Length: 619
Ligand code: ADP
Ligand code: MG
Image (cartoon, rainbow, N blue to C red; front, top):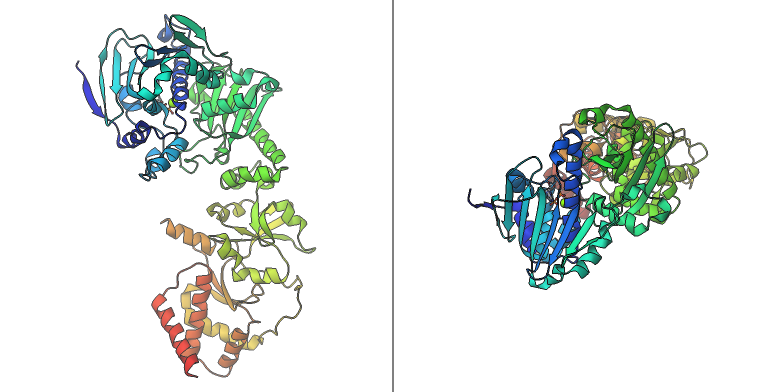
């Protein structure tokens, strides 16, 4: 069969465009990517050979060869791993398989310098070869198959594919180096770079140069080594190797569990939020090894969802080597290991809270995700709550629930919170006035997830957790800091005002209530106790979600406010005309605006306000 020409998938085209123009600041990473692919390929074949030993027949000693060729100005990275057939080559080296990549790449701006940083976060894997090579040839033969293939491209729009004779099992990636990168056709720099990040590769990395052969790495599995002998750099190189990330780990947790179930865990918490952390199919990247043999990194639920930012490996002797996918899902061994690892991670995080500044780096990157644990993980709920941090009315930065409790009023039984779109709007929300006047702290919650977890974490250290936007709150038990409160409106007058207001506003609200929550503002909106908040309803509308259980709305009036008192008095005196009604309507619309809601009739609202202004000016 002759050569076939094919086009790269559109996203790859974009990536290549940036990569080919070599705007990457750190070009050395191409070697890391190619060696990492070679190592993955050996892992895959070693695993496949457990059930089908024939497949690796004749060449069971896995290794990775690096061959710089000064004369030809090429660098070849070859492995005797699983290999690729025609379909694999087209799919794996012609498209980007990572989930969420299309969306991610849509963020590219067209400004090559900026885009290079975006792509830097994303990791371009194989395509990074085109940073240093003007042409790349990949020869590959898949384990168990006879036909070899040649894939070739200059990284500009198309690649070609054809049959190739005499290809040994595995993959050889040959880079025809660009003029500026001819140093990679010699041993020096290549050796230095490979040494930097191949120590944790568990296969020998061997360099062949000018007829000499040298093994560059130790080829031991890092996690089996003694913790005291591993440097921070080795850990962080390993982290980058398994995560394909470019940041440093924020924290490394490495331990051997001994006891009922023995395993070794090496876990990393990244310092940067991965771009796909909110993709629906994002999982924690946990590699499972059985006695140092890589089994899979595809077991779902290796970590609970709320720890999906964790990356790492688990190695155990307690599972058979040929453990099947089905078995992995069911085996109690893994369940026990998992719950052990989760407890260790939560314990580690707890320890890390002691250094507030450092902990906040983690919290800012992953707090939103961790909070999901408050409703996901009923077993560890309290431990997770210990780790959470929140903004509050009484503090500039974030605080823990324990700090909140330590500042509570003597008779205070609840932890109060309010939810909304952003901090500055929340801080000015009139619903907070009554709390501020009494010196009661209120947590300010702005993450969408904050609408959900309070339904699961209803208590913390015997204090109930309560929204100040729902239900009728009794604040009378707490004295005002400043006891010069206005006189209250007469009850009879209020009743008439409430009746008229209900008539004017109609079915949008269930009831007009008086509230102690307001001091400076005349009115506010709230929803029923235990119902979904007005903020949540709005979020669901914005995301076109069906509103499953819409809540009852209440129009709350402040019986101490002069405007309310005056209005009530007028109504008592028999004034129920259009002026009074339109003032009530304006007040209600104001309450909606303050809550972040749109008024139902914006033009009507605006006309009413204009009329009012005219009247005032004509007085
Ligand atoms: P990633 O390694 O993150 O999947 P890459 O761009 O590095 O992304 O590689 C894409 C895919 O190409 C790999 O997932 C693998 O299936 C295939 N591949 C790359 N290099 C090799 C190799 N040396 N042997 C076998 N398959 C490979
Ligand atoms: Mg790769």
